[in-house]
Length: 140
Image (cartoon, rainbow, N blue to C red; front, side, top):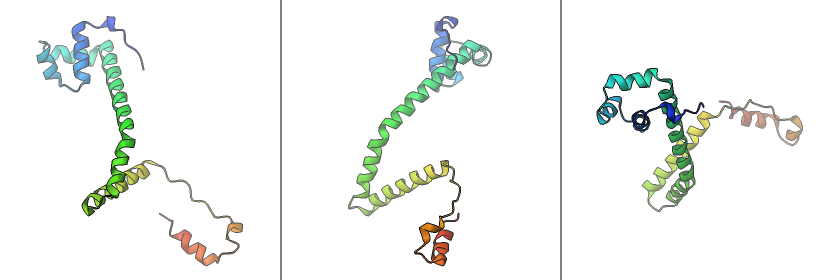
Protein backbone atom coordinates (compact mmCIF):
# COMPACT_ATOMS: atom_id res chain seq x y z
CA UNK A 1 0.00 0.00 0.00
CA UNK A 2 1.26 3.49 -0.81
CA UNK A 3 1.98 5.57 2.24
CA UNK A 4 0.78 9.13 2.10
CA UNK A 5 2.67 12.18 3.24
CA UNK A 6 0.63 14.03 5.84
CA UNK A 7 2.22 17.25 4.64
CA UNK A 8 0.28 16.87 1.37
CA UNK A 9 -3.00 17.36 3.24
CA UNK A 10 -4.23 20.26 5.32
CA UNK A 11 -5.26 19.71 8.95
CA UNK A 12 -8.88 20.06 7.81
CA UNK A 13 -8.40 17.36 5.17
CA UNK A 14 -6.76 15.06 7.75
CA UNK A 15 -9.76 15.54 10.06
CA UNK A 16 -12.09 14.76 7.15
CA UNK A 17 -10.12 11.60 6.35
CA UNK A 18 -10.43 10.47 9.98
CA UNK A 19 -14.17 11.15 10.09
CA UNK A 20 -14.86 9.40 6.77
CA UNK A 21 -12.74 6.42 7.78
CA UNK A 22 -14.91 6.14 10.90
CA UNK A 23 -17.92 5.73 8.60
CA UNK A 24 -19.44 9.20 8.78
CA UNK A 25 -21.31 10.30 5.66
CA UNK A 26 -20.03 12.97 3.29
CA UNK A 27 -22.91 15.23 4.28
CA UNK A 28 -22.27 14.85 8.01
CA UNK A 29 -18.52 15.45 7.63
CA UNK A 30 -19.07 18.47 5.40
CA UNK A 31 -21.51 20.00 7.89
CA UNK A 32 -19.27 19.18 10.86
CA UNK A 33 -16.25 20.81 9.18
CA UNK A 34 -18.19 23.73 7.69
CA UNK A 35 -17.34 22.64 4.14
CA UNK A 36 -19.52 22.37 1.10
CA UNK A 37 -20.41 18.81 0.23
CA UNK A 38 -19.03 19.46 -3.26
CA UNK A 39 -15.59 20.37 -1.85
CA UNK A 40 -15.47 17.24 0.26
CA UNK A 41 -16.69 15.16 -2.66
CA UNK A 42 -13.94 16.59 -4.84
CA UNK A 43 -11.34 15.62 -2.24
CA UNK A 44 -12.73 12.09 -2.10
CA UNK A 45 -13.00 11.64 -5.86
CA UNK A 46 -10.20 13.74 -7.32
CA UNK A 47 -7.45 14.30 -4.74
CA UNK A 48 -4.97 11.42 -4.95
CA UNK A 49 -3.32 12.20 -1.61
CA UNK A 50 -6.72 12.35 0.11
CA UNK A 51 -7.79 9.06 -1.51
CA UNK A 52 -4.55 7.35 -0.47
CA UNK A 53 -4.84 8.63 3.10
CA UNK A 54 -8.46 7.51 3.34
CA UNK A 55 -7.76 4.03 1.93
CA UNK A 56 -4.75 3.60 4.20
CA UNK A 57 -6.62 4.64 7.33
CA UNK A 58 -9.59 2.42 6.43
CA UNK A 59 -7.23 -0.53 5.91
CA UNK A 60 -5.48 0.13 9.23
CA UNK A 61 -8.81 0.33 11.04
CA UNK A 62 -9.99 -2.88 9.39
CA UNK A 63 -6.76 -4.67 10.38
CA UNK A 64 -7.13 -3.45 13.98
CA UNK A 65 -10.74 -4.67 14.11
CA UNK A 66 -9.72 -8.04 12.63
CA UNK A 67 -6.99 -8.37 15.26
CA UNK A 68 -9.52 -7.64 18.01
CA UNK A 69 -11.91 -10.27 16.63
CA UNK A 70 -9.10 -12.83 16.44
CA UNK A 71 -8.22 -12.01 20.04
CA UNK A 72 -11.80 -12.61 21.16
CA UNK A 73 -12.25 -15.84 19.23
CA UNK A 74 -10.79 -18.20 21.85
CA UNK A 75 -12.87 -16.62 24.62
CA UNK A 76 -15.98 -16.76 22.47
CA UNK A 77 -15.42 -20.43 21.69
CA UNK A 78 -15.01 -21.09 25.42
CA UNK A 79 -18.39 -19.49 26.09
CA UNK A 80 -20.04 -21.53 23.34
CA UNK A 81 -18.37 -24.66 24.71
CA UNK A 82 -19.75 -23.90 28.17
CA UNK A 83 -23.17 -23.46 26.58
CA UNK A 84 -22.98 -27.01 25.24
CA UNK A 85 -22.68 -28.24 28.83
CA UNK A 86 -25.52 -26.10 30.18
CA UNK A 87 -28.43 -28.02 31.75
CA UNK A 88 -30.91 -25.76 29.91
CA UNK A 89 -31.86 -27.42 26.61
CA UNK A 90 -32.45 -24.13 24.79
CA UNK A 91 -29.00 -22.85 25.71
CA UNK A 92 -27.41 -26.14 24.60
CA UNK A 93 -29.39 -26.04 21.36
CA UNK A 94 -28.34 -22.44 20.69
CA UNK A 95 -24.69 -23.29 21.35
CA UNK A 96 -24.85 -26.41 19.17
CA UNK A 97 -26.51 -24.47 16.37
CA UNK A 98 -23.78 -21.83 16.55
CA UNK A 99 -21.04 -24.48 16.38
CA UNK A 100 -22.66 -26.09 13.34
CA UNK A 101 -23.14 -22.71 11.68
CA UNK A 102 -19.48 -21.81 12.22
CA UNK A 103 -18.35 -25.18 10.90
CA UNK A 104 -20.57 -24.97 7.82
CA UNK A 105 -19.33 -21.46 7.10
CA UNK A 106 -15.72 -22.60 7.38
CA UNK A 107 -16.36 -25.63 5.18
CA UNK A 108 -18.09 -23.51 2.56
CA UNK A 109 -14.99 -21.33 2.29
CA UNK A 110 -12.66 -24.29 1.80
CA UNK A 111 -12.24 -26.03 -1.50
CA UNK A 112 -13.05 -29.71 -1.51
CA UNK A 113 -9.98 -31.89 -1.92
CA UNK A 114 -9.97 -34.21 -4.92
CA UNK A 115 -11.50 -37.63 -4.38
CA UNK A 116 -8.86 -40.28 -3.93
CA UNK A 117 -9.00 -44.02 -4.32
CA UNK A 118 -8.28 -46.26 -1.34
CA UNK A 119 -5.26 -48.38 -2.12
CA UNK A 120 -6.24 -52.03 -2.55
CA UNK A 121 -3.74 -53.30 0.01
CA UNK A 122 -5.56 -51.34 2.76
CA UNK A 123 -8.66 -53.39 1.98
CA UNK A 124 -7.15 -56.87 1.87
CA UNK A 125 -9.26 -58.09 4.81
CA UNK A 126 -12.42 -56.26 3.75
CA UNK A 127 -15.24 -57.21 1.50
CA UNK A 128 -14.98 -55.01 -1.58
CA UNK A 129 -18.75 -54.54 -1.76
CA UNK A 130 -18.86 -53.14 1.78
CA UNK A 131 -16.02 -50.75 0.98
CA UNK A 132 -17.77 -49.57 -2.17
CA UNK A 133 -20.97 -49.00 -0.20
CA UNK A 134 -19.15 -46.95 2.42
CA UNK A 135 -17.19 -44.94 -0.14
CA UNK A 136 -20.33 -44.16 -2.14
CA UNK A 137 -21.72 -42.53 0.98
CA UNK A 138 -18.97 -39.91 0.76
CA UNK A 139 -19.88 -38.69 -2.72
CA UNK A 140 -21.21 -35.15 -2.64
